[in-house]
Image 1: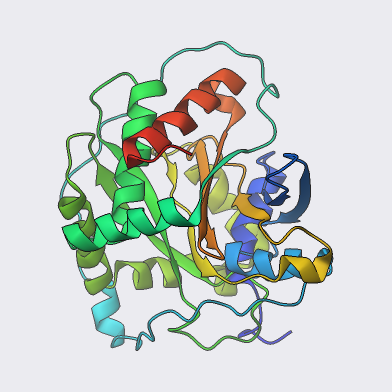
Image 2: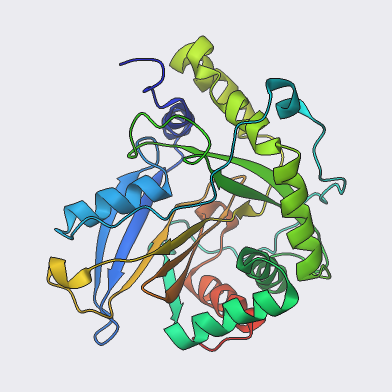
Length: 318
């Protein structure tokens, strides 16, 4: 396999798996009438969320959906990829509430969804406030986590993934092609502040720096990545990775499913990114998925409460 086609991002998830950190992403098809689920589980070492959607669609026999066409981004000059981060606030050292629930109680991701009318209303509110929908979603999620999982009043760090498919040469769609940056969110923030911080990070090309750093496996190899990863896992605590996978059109009937099937996806989280989540809009219906890593000691009841608070902070009744 050529260097261009090697999945260097996947090396990190392979390294984490060696340390006992689950890298399973679940892609879930839900019949809204019965609540019955069909789940395709894939490994993050092989696919990011966008790639996983394509593979999951193929595995259930669905006509292949088109990858959402994002804004075409030109790669900046190399020196501009190493600018100072746009984020100036330092997150507090997170203090999680103690629940004492046994590991393994909270297994499958919880899912709620907004119908097309509710989804449109959320987009309209974002448009009226001149912010992205992701700004509303991330702020609402942090407030929900603050209400239900954190000792109150703490700003927290969130990983914000960035799809690189429209910025780099893509050897194949079905691999890890995402970078990221981190931003600090406080429960008293406004959507405008979150939106401004996201835009500043993108303008400062912070995700490009992480893209290059994450690909050091090209020089270190898998053993070197394993060594670095073992030290990073004991590093800074973050709330989680905010995963928003865009707007899709899916032909559920081509796979023998109901036309109003709800699609959702969610990763497993990790000890230093314990709040796993996923937002996907399919056929105009937005799904929100949530899963808490066992390291939090929180169970099904806490996850349900957190997901419901997320919906409440969005101002929508799912």
